[in-house]
Length: 139
Ligand code: THU
Image: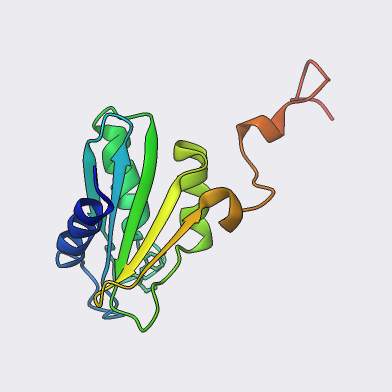
């Protein structure tokens, strides 16, 4: 799968963004290990706080369609410089995708590429909760 196809999928998804409050449209597309592409857009709501970012929509859609292994995600915004994912999305992408390649693009097709481990150093995840004690329910 070429990076271009992944960016195109994110670009198309961006046009479906439901962003009446911010006016900031975001598109994302995750590529599964089997090369399937699943896209998402940001979806805002009137109480603001329940807003879902494009990256999480794409990842949750992919998970709900049965995908469990991912290689990269593209994120497209209409910004001067390609925009990085927010902290919440970094967390979700890490937990379900591991050290993904993160491809950022704007509408001028400027592209930046990162590894998620570099964008989210020292992450908290299931492995972090390992304990030598046998029971976690007591103090
Ligand atoms: N947004 C995303 O979709 N992804 C991000 O990583 C950052 C922010 C959305 C949420 C909201 O709808 C709008 O952009 C402005 O924050």
